[in-house]
Length: 322
Image (cartoon, rainbow, N blue to C red; front, top):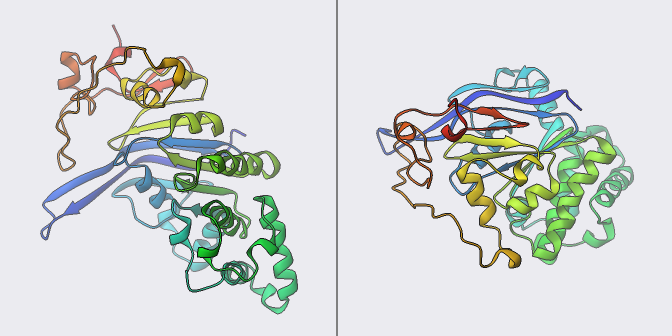
């Protein structure tokens, strides 16, 4: 359980804007984190916090500006041989937000799943019946069966069914790690827990590790072994769900308070300033200072490190040395 399967060390991603590239966006800012074998890690944050950029870097879709990403101790961006890269994609798979954009609308779902099987296991091209049996076994892991999808195009099934099929497609290569970017944001509320339960089942039955990216605090609390909170590309808090039940960082408190709750309807809430958020500029000091109701003079001058507080970590001067 403690073996690290994915390790990010001081990873930064900077995008250049404009014809001459003079304007820069620091999408991910010196992020270090590990994903352990057989755990579910949630990465939380609002839009623009860098969550999807981290996912794309882990999936080798975009290269970090600096820092390293390792899979089982090997730097994924130093892989040069196609055999090594293919093996990485067999073991590390992605599930994306919109299942309808993940499938070719002109082709039947089963044909697309067969393509995946044939690419992963070329020997099965000679035995379509066996390939279909393998697909059905995999579909059963996500609560589907082959007859539900037989003869159907992506638009002929529900969003929840298609997202299950997308997870099944990711499982066809027998991965040890799945990164899911907002996997339940485009399915109806009644289906969300069912989708998240798939990742829990995969962990408990097969030891599959997962990173689930999102912004819903309550869903992350339900599914995760550990939670990392991002704000403007930086980790501002991390810990297990029990630690983050009573969050420390003002931004994490804001995320938690944003979850509707009938029994807290009349509670007084913290007032967070909108602030002037310019993605092309990095402010001096704490990146959350322009929105924080607890801002102190040091917050404007010096960037806080990640302080260890109890079983968690928090990037906030409120918890620094007194």
